[in-house]
Length: 338
Image: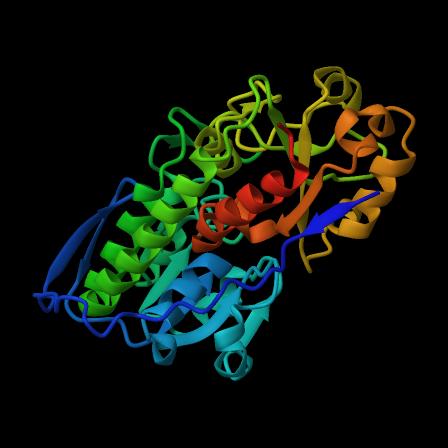
C-alpha cells in the first residue's frame, strides 16, 4: 500500500520585520469572549494554557515568558520552540486538574476546547475559575457558530472559517499588548492560506472526487470518529472542491465502516498523533486496520493506496490546518486522479 506521509512539524513562521506597527493596547481592555465579558487592567504576566493551540499561538507572538504551565498535547510542539517549551512545566499531556491549574496562580487561563473549560468542562467550568479570580479565554474557534451541547464534540451551524482563528490571534495580541506581533502572524498565515487555496483550486479534480478524514476510534472494533460537514476537514475539502462522504453536522460523529465503505471515498486522510488515549490514536494501527478489516479494505482508496497521513492537530482549528491544506493538495496531485 502506498501511503503519503506529511510530517507533523509546521515550517517555522517568521514574523516579518516590515509589518506595520500596531497600536499599543489601552487598558482597561474589555473583550467579549464566548458569552463572557473579560476586563483586563494590564497584560497578564502568568498564563496557564489548556490546549496546544493556544500554547503555540503565544509562542509565535513571542510571549513564551508569560506561560507558566501547559497542558493537552496531541503532538510535539512546533520545532522552533522545542527548547523553550522543554523548560516550561507541563501539567498534563491530556486533561489537567482544576487544582493543578489554580495552584500556578495564573492571571489568565487560555483554553482551546470548551469541553475542557466550559459549561460542562471536564477540567472545570469557566465560573469555577472566575469565582477564584482567574479569568479564562476560550478560543473563538470553538464557540463561534458552534453549539458544544450537541454531539460528543459539538455541532457547527456554519462551515469553519479561518477568520475565527484570526480573531483569536487578534484578541490575544490585544490582551497581552502584542498587537504588532499578532498582526505580523496573521499576515503571514493569510498569505500562506491564500497560496494553499490557489494550489487546491488549481488541482482540477474530477467531478465526484470525495474524501474521508479519520481522527481516531475509541476502540478498533467500533465505529470511528470521522470529520463532519462543517469542521476544519470540511473547510479543507471545500477549498479542494471535493465531497465529504460524511453527512453529519457534528464536529466528529461516529459512523460505521459499512456506511463509509458504501460511500467509497476517493481518498482517506488519517490523523497521526503522539497522544494515546484510544488504540486508534496510533497511526500504524489505523493503517493496519484499513488493510486487514474485511469491510474497510474493500474501499477503493485503500486498494489504490490513496491514503494521506497528516498531523492530528491540523484537523482542529489551529495554524497547522492552513499548512495541512497545502500538504493535502500536494498529495492529491501525486495521485494523478485525472
